[in-house]
Length: 290
Length: 181
Image 1 (cartoon, each protein chain N blue to C red):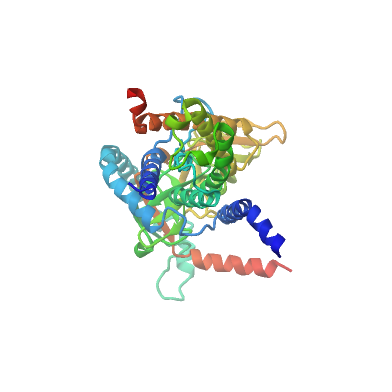
Image 2: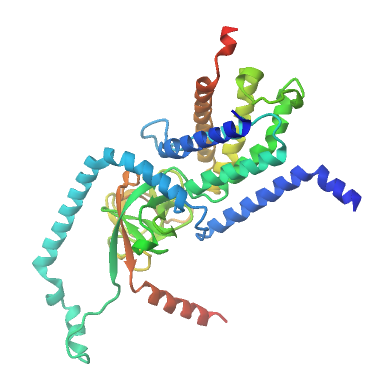
């Protein structure tokens, strides 16, 4: 016993050092699976407030640029409304008519709901682009209806997914992250995954596109309904294509549609049908296991 | 001013400088080079380097853990900064012992600084531990060795820039009594 105590005394520092490092490794390994703890995140009370105070000061310097981006977005939305109103897809489309007329059990014609999206605005109070997993902190929390796994868009394109929520703040894992990949499709409907290799914040990658698919520089890439984003949101444009020698598949370099360097306002999108879909998918997964 | 208060104020100052100023400035050395890394210089390990000589190792480890965890909570990297900072906090005493001519107990009630160590030993001490910190941190953060040249480039750029900030800090906060004497 005495030698044991002597041993502990002799190597106390080393044991403490190893113990603390093991605690750190456990914490890191928890965040590797996208499920970190909310306390050590920028959504917590202290860091959120400090970031907010700092942003209140810096905020005014970006107002001109923000006005421009809002004006551009308004113009885009107005253009979209104009094209939709011209054709009036809801009444004239061949796709919707049979559905509306065949289902008369409720008396009136009825619209099929696949998803029901609620948009909330939020202001960016902290942002990073240089880390391997980049996080954005916003000034909205669960008191404003933000919850985990909601998707986040900017005026121009996709941004990320909510991972930590506190009362007044939330932190978002942006698509500039080496640990999350997003389902995406090309203009002609080819599916693939958008990933980021951790190098430059203005280049994303789309791997394993078959060689016979013709991709031009400047082609748009959209989200799919498989991803956590709403479908058909612009993700980016093709910057460069490269055919890999080893497996004859194309690697697309993609310029993201959102400018991650100066994000000011974001939209947090809640999918009302998401829970139902998740329960259904989970139940299928459980059943398919032997 | 008591030793504890002075170190606590330095802790607040360096952490606020790191979190509110340096974390917002993502640097890169050239404007549009293909694949050149952008990075944040991490200067907060300087707080660990400037703790008094007689701080025991267990206290250094715990202070390092708290410092790292504070930076982690701002940068959403649970544990990464803490891991790297605890490592340099543990090795600090050994590096000081190797670099200083006298025993550490002879420097009672003093902080390591350029006055009692001299410029070259202090910069060696700071550079060694900063290189270690940055290497461990960036390696753990990226955890992807397919592009190792990029990782090395990022470590080198960030270390040199951090050392630059450390030297500026030392020039600003060293009292100039030596020059007059």
